[in-house]
View (cartoon, rainbow, N blue to C red):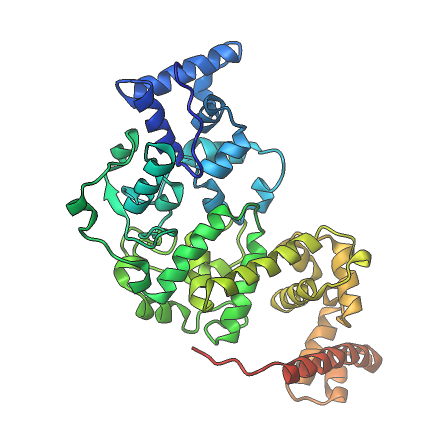
Amino acid sequence: MHVPIKPFANEYALGWRGRLRFLNHYPNVKTLVDDLRRDFSIRHNGGLACDVPLLYIFAEASGMSEADFLANHTLIPFFRAFDVKNFGGNGWGKQIVNFIKYRGLSSTKKNACFCIECVEDDLGCYGIPYWHREHQLPAVDWCPTHGHKLKELALSAFDNPPPILNHSEQNSDLGNLDCAHSVIQRYVATSDYVLNRGGHLDFHLVSHFLERKAMEMGMVGPDGSDLCLNNTVKNFLPESWLDEISGGFNRGNYDLDLTSVFQRGVNQRATEIYVLLFAFFYESIDEIKLQFEKIDHVNNLSDLDWERCSSKFFLDEFIYSEYIRCGGSVSDVVASGSFCLPEVEKNFGLNGLPPLCGERDSDIRALSDFFQGESLSEVCSTYNVEIDVLERLLRCSGARVARALSEIGKRPSIEKV
């Protein structure tokens, strides 16, 4: 390597590779990559560089750590934004290394994108333009910085710096983000924010906050079922743009299912769906950032000693909602939120909630029938339940109802879309 090249701010890894090839006069990218692998193998005592993710080799050639290179020059922070389980720690397991190896340089876009304003800025600052990673985000067709419509070239364009266009080319096919749909504007801003915010979140928490908002707007049911969410979004936004949301569509078959993020899964859904829901539910990027601050708050509280926490509001609300959705099963709440059992049981006790998974099925059925209109004596006789057992459960339930009514009285009515 005659000219070692450090990446510019937010320079996309494939673009950095092309600039490295260009400035070192390699005839093609393959020759460059072969040299990088060979040098990597020599420095690591003959190790098989073919088994190492190419991004690791790029990171070493750039003089950066693997974590810093991935965080600042790839789309992985966006694609795995809510994968705190695998990406939130200091070490990466085999599954994540395989993801980095096979998906680390992949993109949902079919073209290489650049902003002509950014090209001019880069020329003024560095004397050479470069490929910005925020321009490669899925369904982001505008520059988040300048708001101009992005130019598109074939993916092979990454092998060279972005072109410097003449005046007539610069003014052709330009569009401004301000003229785009308001939801799309928020999607662009939110995508850029998610890419650059740093850190990872639990997708269970993100899904929970989004589901609560969807329920408030009357778009999903208490069990996460679709009432009108999918159809409303489809009818509200341009079909041509929705087709770019890779997680929501299956190769143009238009089977968008936004409620999939509310289903109990073991892995996060495509980040584009979460971002689209944030952009659709909230009126400004500032509101969306506030929701992320709340999620961060809950995320951090879950790892602290609850006795030392001065405020547990968001955590209490999360656990209570999960308690309802899981039918009172403490073990399911523990699994859905990655909490430990003693902490969850303590939270239930502090909020007057009975740990229903410890109650007999007959007690639960009796309580359910009582709420359906049968008398206390009838349900006790039918299910052979002691009346003091149901009275205890009713007192706990009544305390929660009183709290809910108090909260309702404090809140303004929510206008449904």
